Image (cartoon, rainbow, N blue to C red; front, side, top):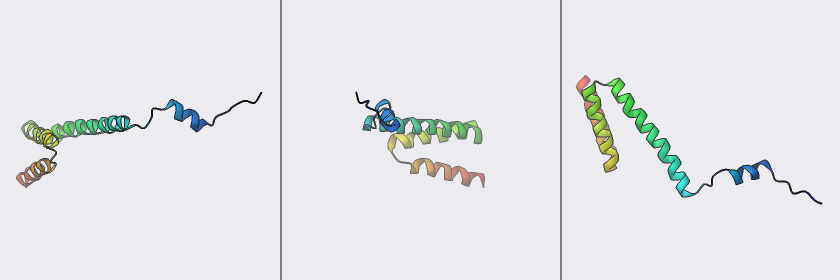
Length: 83
């Protein structure tokens, strides 16, 4: 009787979740959310509470409107105010 063997890569491929578009979106969104939360926490450590609250609002609005320039413009204005 001949024994069928599979390589370790074949074993892993059958156990690992597939790379469907749903899995890819889920993985990317997890990384993005973790990054966004870290950025917001950093805002509150670097800026005063009032400034951080303003930038937090601008950050979330930039995500909602899909327009990152709104947030970057706000950051630029904060840097100009400090000078």
